[in-house]
Length: 373
Image 1 (cartoon, one colour):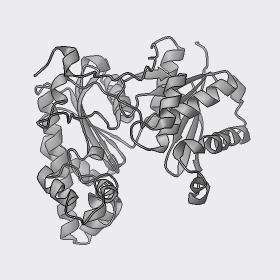
Image 2 (cartoon, rainbow, N blue to C red; image 1 turned 180 degrees about the vertical axis):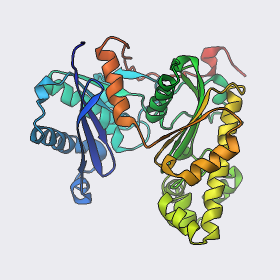
Image 3 (cartoon, rainbow, N blue to C red; image 1 turned 90 degrees about the horizontal axis):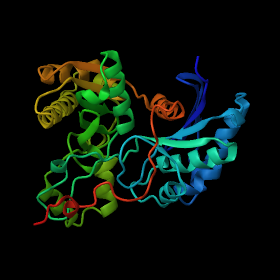
Image 4 (cartoon, rainbow, N blue to C red; image 1 turned 135 degrees about the horizontal axis):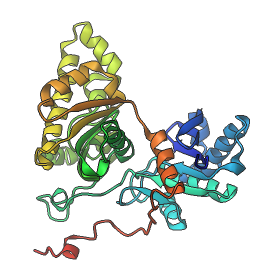
């Protein structure tokens, strides 16, 4: 029997903070601490919430009888950072400082690295983040666009996608780094990624207006029409960004982001709701086909995950459209908490070497790889 490691997982969200306590792979405690709009509204910016969230976490753990002094590692989500390589990072001072600056997107997940380091320092443990949302392992051809200086960026759901890919590899008795997979995370936002032998070589994330529509996002739009909207005087910059990233897709077309509600409307004969849902299925299928092409058709599995993967209507529609590509496996829900614990555990056991954050870009530019115009 190996050592029993205590790992505390922290996942700050928009209105709550999820906390889990793991002994090796086994979850011993879980809670989702709700934060009211009034509580969060007292802070000028997300990083200012650090003491409030930290105290809420420690109070919940102490009330549950968790001995924080026995913690070996704190592991947290990581969003809002510049492009980074995938894997597990041991949080250093620079990472915590950059997270506080919110150099990438603005999300409560920016607090992940700060909380992990703060708690680790306080209790004499190690602080990690796993598979940052800005994980960038793009192949070179995935970066270029036809607009000089405008490059595609890698941003999606790498934490859950990689966790599901590793789970699938284990399920079929193979190594993740020897498989080619198309992985689809389906929630309020939807991302589709090509995983080529352990690397996420291309991805389309609807957060930035790519790929298929999602419950809260528009997906890809005709670029010229969007430019015309920008100069029409009808929308502010913030309103258009919100439409693309928060209030588009089903919210704009159906007034809801709930798959259950949409399916109820379909069952009651709502033809428009069925048309929107079927179009989403159609667009997801197109994206899966595109990312199968990235893998030259050599696909060991198509993996469907996220909250929408609970919808049999959605799954059946996708399977009917793309089943010819390869085996389709469904992993409903999210595995983020388990993935955060597993990443830290691999390092503690010496099975993985944590990366060190430098703040330097993963892709320094085409000149660095010998490509100049």
